[in-house]
Length: 172
Image (spheres, one colour):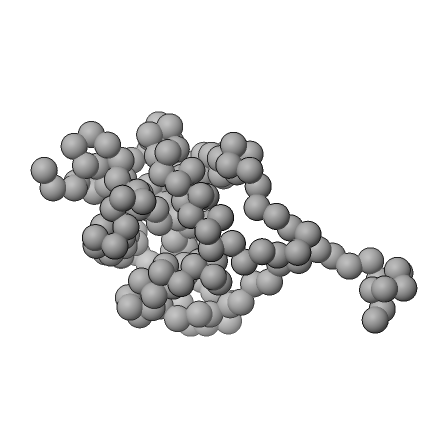
């Protein structure tokens, strides 16, 4: 049976939980190892992520696509929207791909690209022409996928512990 990609709602969060946990496990393998800022444990991560997904899905136009393979979730994508960008000429709003997840056993088989193409269709239906995609700097496979699709690095975010400028070692 072919994979069917369809819009889903907040009621599908429990169904995509195993995929989300697999994403976090994958992030552990590509973790950039930021000193003093370790990755959360998976249960704590899912708790935060689930609440974030609930909040996003309550916003207008946010959408969740789930790839269904004979009753099992094989992947999903979650997209939010923002008002026009202040630095770049965009439409009145642009999309942000918050998550794109494919089951580990399905990676490399084209499902991620299929999900991404359905994301493009839905984003365009909702009136946006631009989209930003966040990806861990060390997640080479995901970066290659997005670059094949024409996306390029745009804003580099950095993360670290805030130094105490009043400590002698911080001044050196």
